[in-house]
Length: 345
Image (cartoon, rainbow, N blue to C red; front, side, top):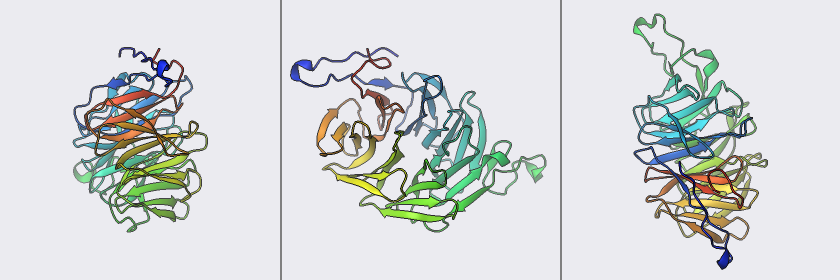
């Protein structure tokens, strides 16, 4: 990937803008982006989900392609990396979630569902042995990967004729049966490992206590949910896009709304930079990235570059850039700091 150089806006008293890095490779709309934490070697990674069925792993700093996870037979709606980036989890329209070895690209587990899987989440642990899923079943499931030796099913059907020699399926259990009134669009595992968060098409955000297996808090949104993500800051917030509003919740106190900001545009995606007190949105009706001041809610910047609506936004774990994924099939990386960084010199 070529280096990008900053344009010079100092004469107008503006912070110099950097040309975004464009990551090609996908052939259909991008549905979800997620960064790993910063690892011991100061490296981090980016995984992208796409309707072309093929999630991709990239170097988080440069956007350079590392590998593609091959095996899904339908659109991939969400993809996440484990805390140590050793595993990847993907949720697909082929009625399955898959767990992958991110170093080799090998599919370690196939978790079969009875409908489209839209969401997947790991607890924040190295080499996690649990994974949560949600989707059109309207069920929040948790699978125990430690009790399955290879690709497995959520059903009791044997994986080979007569079940002879078949590995046992990864057992799963449902949290809050019958509660979700619509497909689950996003699942977030809180920094408190006993709390899971779901965002569903019934316009509800729910916080689930895994110890009690019950809903600890809930919040009704004004519109259909877009993105729902927990940021990587030391004091994390949950950022939710719904209708024309961005909602910011405490990342540690279930159900506690910090702020709701309503704009004139329909918001499909939102991400908060807690330290800079700014947030970034992507809209349904245009192709632009908007940067807002969190305190006074004013629009600070308008970034152009995509050629389709922006469905997903995520800040890098060090907060020095953010990534956007669009209907146009590209991932773009946008510099969010004043000093040289990565390929921006």
